[in-house]
Amino acid sequence: MATTLNAAVSLTSSNSSSLPATSCAIAPERIRFTKSAFYYKSNNVVTGKRVVSIRAQISTETDTPAPAPVKKVEKHSKKNEEGVIVNRYRPKEPYTGKCLLNTKITADDAPGETWHMVFSHEGEIPYREGQSVGVIAEGIDKNGKPHKVRLYSIASSALGDLGNSETVSLCVKRLVYTNDQGEVVKGVCSNFLCDLKPGSAVKLTGPVGKEMLMPKDPNATVIMLATGTGIAPFRSFLWKMFFEKHDDYKFNGLAWLFLGVPTTSSLLYQEEFDRMKAKAPENFRVDYAISREQANDKGEKMYIQTRMAQYAAELWELLKKDNTFVYMCGLKGMEKGIDDIMVSLAANDGIDWFDYKKQLKKAEQWNVEVY
Image (cartoon, rainbow, N blue to C red; front, side):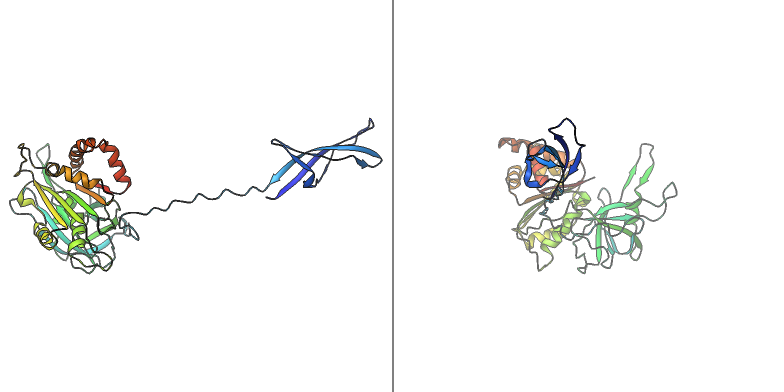
């Protein structure tokens, strides 16, 4: 530590006359340090013709080193997050893709239409499984402004349905309802998308989101809870797990899907899931909850939480493991129903479920995207 010492020195002679105060530099080895001040006392000094004693209070100017910068703790995510890209395209400068395919995937007697669509992006929107893209519908709103971006979970793996990393797929339900005034209301973006013809242009933004990224661990247990079109991100997971070959990834864990829909005619991608189950029976499980057609032993409608309750003890044991990841996508009310199942199970082990869920979230093992 470099120190500069300066002293305001009072010189008092043995005679009655006094000398004016002066300043001088003091050799550091003559300094006495106390907690609150520094003092220096010399032997008698001859100044001119008088002998004086010197007592000086020393002030210091210290070059105090700057505090060391706080080192940030590097986060090591359990998810496939490294190098992930977000917001390459924004609403003011979207990417214009092309519709390659658009097909209805629910039966004609289903309560509502759901469509699967594939858009080209020529490698310009390099997304990951679990991310979303934005769509800007053509036209203007009632205020004469361009329509706002509507986000949709991506329903294809990063390689895309064509396997060339140049397409992105969506799973979209056409929104049509009657309001309180008896008027038929159509959702702007969903109807725009469901009506698209192959060859049509579509404005895309993104990709966005990290919440629903897949775990890196190929031996993980991945529990997927979906209602309706909330199946989209899980189709992307499952294609990567069971339909694709990767040099750096081979899934050896357990993928367990719970899908809730109102009717059998509303089931989405069932044929694909059947093929996956046949291909990897030890690694893939799927359970459907068809609310208008199924009931439990108590006669209660079979919602997704009702189906999960049938496996509650097994699910709770899986949730105790640090390589089990839960992903939830779909209607907002589904999480409460799942909480209701887990509260009593956790309590049997002396655990507060809501505290435990917070720990799971912190560990990236409880991931929710609801609407």
